[in-house]
Amino acid sequence: MQPLSRRTVLKGAGATLALPVLDAMVPKAAWAAPEMLAANRMAFVYIPNGAIVPDWAPTGLGKDYKLSKTLSPLAPHQSDLIVFSGFAHDLARSKNDGAGDHARDSAVFLTGSRPRKSDSDIHVGQSIDQKAADVVGKQTRLPSLELGTEAGRQAGKCDSGYGCAYQSNISWKSATTPMAKEINPSAVFERLFGGENDPKVQAKRAFYRKSILDFVSEDTGKLTKVLGSSDKQKIDEYFTSVREIEQRMERATKERVEPPKMDIPDGVPKDFVTHVRLMYDLMVVAFQTDVTRISTLMLANSGSNRTYKEIGVPEAHHQISHHKNDPEKLAWLQKIDQHMVTQFAYFLKRLKETKEGNSNLLANSMILYGCSISDPNRHNHDNLPILLAGHGSGTIDSGRHVKFDKEVPLSNLYVSMLERMNVPVSSFGDSTGKIAQLKA
Image 1 (cartoon, helix red, strand yellow):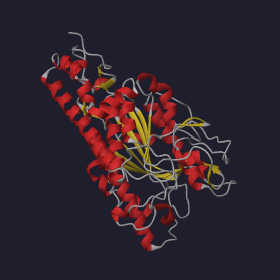
Image 2 (tube, rainbow, N blue to C red; image 1 turned 120 degrees about the vertical axis):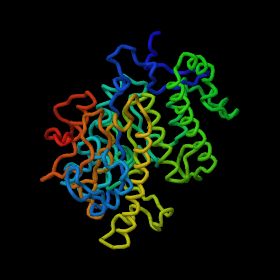
Image 3 (cartoon, rainbow, N blue to C red; image 1 turned 90 degrees about the vertical axis):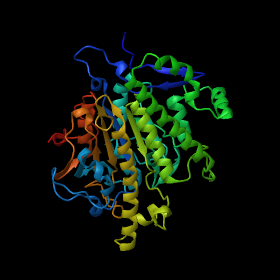
Image 4 (cartoon, helix red, strand yellow; image 1 turned 180 degrees about the horizontal axis):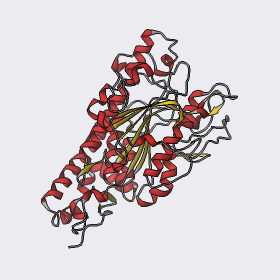
């Protein structure tokens, strides 16, 4: 029997459901192995308002490092991380442009380019995810996936003369075109699995409260007849995961936040943890099914003033980020930093639990976490809080703390990551070379 195509999908009534890697997709030749089908993935998770670096930075170097208080939730994944100390984004500094560090923070983060200080003539640079999507995106149904948890304006003035688009986006298709993020999990789900995206089909599904699994049941029945027991188990586990996401979105929609006086998509969860974890799960499924290999997630917009009363922080994030070394505010900020890291640990757990051949998604991914501000009070843009999770399909030696002797452009890391996505470039943004430290 001929092996199944890696692009096999289940269809029905306008719905399309991609499949994870199955043994039946692998040729029976002796040299073939499931892991040969694995492709490197790349994701970027942005955190707002910097971090309290003394509570973030690990102690020790190389493999003999100890996670800090803030990074302690990542303990189960310590061997899957490289925590960096010493990266900088020089072009996020004020130079002659004055205030506007939050706009520069998010604009420079993935572009390594200087944003033009204007609210109408925006210009920054193509971001690393879109540079990769230009090449890798041709191999998947979606070139890339841009996610967030807060709506943002794409026009107008937001931060000391900078356009709002700079603070609302980290992904840029070109120097003048941001890739607007989606904050509604239901809309993301439909984009991943909605097939023809026919409004009538979506309305029918909503009316009958049917799962996408119901709509592809006929195709599923035909497929399972030709699968072995191992593949049937993989399909069952995958379908269970998809259905769980659907059920959680249904619950989140019933408890959705009352929108303020702005356009916010229906179905956005009120609870931060619920919202973020749904977005992480959707990223996992998108990678698992190879719908896309590139994604970004903004945990909040740059300069976000979200509140985190659920963890005992009574005041808003940006407000307390100007802490002036007040011990109470520093403690609150550390709590927020650790709260976000806890959700990131959930994402890494889900990636590692998702098998792919004889490996797993985390092993076949590069997940960068951080931002372009270190101390939020002084708006520093050096010694950035940056970590890289995953093994890059065997191209990264993880489980280390790498500390540079002098300031190194974060764009240097991007050159090395692009190389591992088979997008070789001689430079990117303000890079000065590659990062040799990804290999021990």
